[in-house]
Amino acid sequence: MSLSPRVIALLGFGEAGSAIARGLCAERGWRGPSKPGDNAPRRVIAIDTALDKDARGTALGKTARGLDVAIEGTYTEALREADLVICAVQGEFARDAAAAAAPLLKKGAHYLDLCTITGKMSDEDRAEIDKGAGRYIDIAVMGGFFSQGIKAPMLVAGEDAGDMVAWMNANGFVATLLGPKPGSASSVKMLRSTLVKGIEALGVEALVTAKRQGILEEVLGCLGDADAQTLRGFITMLVRTHVVHAHRRWEEMGLVAQTLRETGVDPLMTEAIERSHRRTVDAHIAPADGQVPSLDEALEILSEKVVRGV
Image 1 (tube, rainbow, N blue to C red):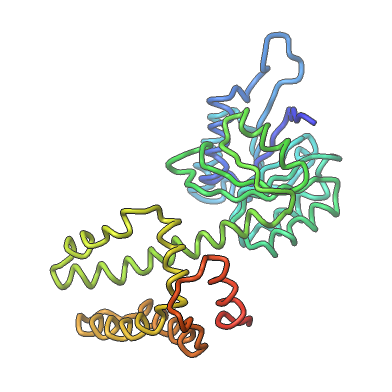
Image 2 (cartoon, rainbow, N blue to C red):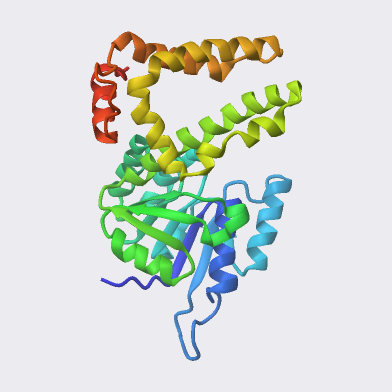
């Protein structure tokens, strides 16, 4: 089934919503008739509850009108015109947006949830949309709208996801099909954030210490082993060898924490790493033969004997 929406509604017209509007309106012809003689012009409309309430709200209204996007500050009957609804509000407001939009959706309208939320929150959003006549699609944005605009890579999951990906890629987006299960795209993004933001926090702690000690370039320059492989490969290698070398690494992290304290840096991340490695040490999982397991084997061991539930 090919999709051919004529009216797209954006819920939230901040950085994400306005970037998508620019991509659709300025680059893909989503203003006025799509071809001569077309009596059903393609249109983009928007709803943002901050409209004209402060300086930011005034600015987003000006941006919308500059793109010929009809924008309103409340969820009104105009939403019933939309064939496709793209929700790009902050994650904490995602469910409120879904609940407000659901009663107004036309039958069969697709609801694309771009909010940064957990898999469980995605299920809650979907439940709201299912109460109405909409069809929920879970989308995880894996890049930045500020630098990439509508080309920010997206993972798409849910029923009809394949058709939606085809339409998105034909209209300026960069979308990849993940599968039919809503919530899975959101979970991928959350776990990616664990890795990326964790590296970010470690970078702050380590590089501030290096800068204070006058060895910043030397520290950055000793990362050749990581540079020699992909980030995926490097992380995979660390997890596999963790099963074998957790004890030695735990002892080392105790000395690292001491080094940071001597430099006047609170070893917040380093202490967490030390505790994490100690948890593995206490589980006594190191193989007697010292052989490094495969990733699947390592994760099975860690899941069963080390990483407990809460």
